[in-house]
Image (tube, rainbow over all chains, first blue to last red; front, side, top):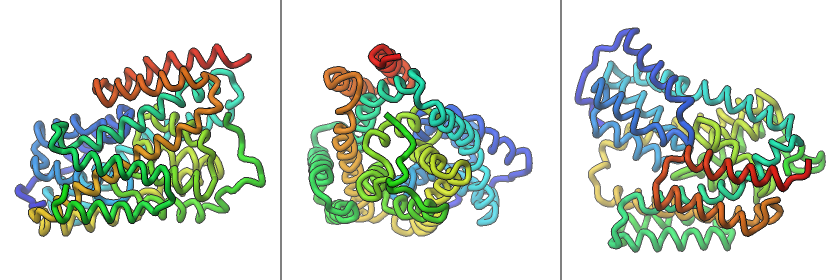
Length: 194
Length: 191
């Protein structure tokens, strides 16, 4: 990611940056990925704090790396910081982006979960958990299908789909370690077979 | 039904245990951590049953914030309160943050190599399959559901079609289908 611009960032800009992440936190139902369109509008279109290429690379790297995909937020902050100065302001950008994104949702989720745990015998709490269960399984399967077709829904991609389906069967039916499957996927992709 | 884990059940021994367990599992989570959480915490460590995992995942999904982050807060908080939630959360984030930064720093030099792009695409396909396997494994957690298997299949398929095929916003599914399913479950449960 080449810093193609040099931004002038003062306290006012950093504050605006922080408050934008803060305001998106409670809207991120369904995960950080759900906020991507709005992040793009704010960082790339409106303020030009990031280039299109920097924005896309931040998401791609966070998805390829181990760990929660929400780390793309950290990379967005890092790149804004790099554009605004250097490595030090990059770290500052990570700190503001991650705390802004996580503090509100973390407080709400923690307290809601503790309340649910204390009141787990309530009929309404039990109904919520039992009722949501089949939906949750459907949603997880949806995530799988959406990711499997992320590079396009045309039939040319059938080798990728086959690879996803075979992976699902192997992981479902065997105890093979996930890292073997990922390594195989990386090699098959490296040699251009899918 | 969720209940406090019985004393003889496997559970995290300390905050350090929580932090290290979550660090180890998150570092295996290429392309998303959820498949790994299920495998490590349900199948290997047995801190959770499949039913409990589904229940926690429902809460993690409904609440704002990244799902796996929410899940780590819920699981950590159950054993050690706020401290446990923070231990699990920082385990989930600290090491991957360093790795993501390292990757970003070296990315520019390799981004144009077609082999690297291909390898990422291959790993992406595998990651999608792993999440699919998680869903398949969790189906057995629905056996004891008060809705009965017919309703479970109907609601599961309906949410699958709504999200994966029709690409409806998640809130419609959670509040629409979810609300209906919760109301049915409420009726089935004896007061």
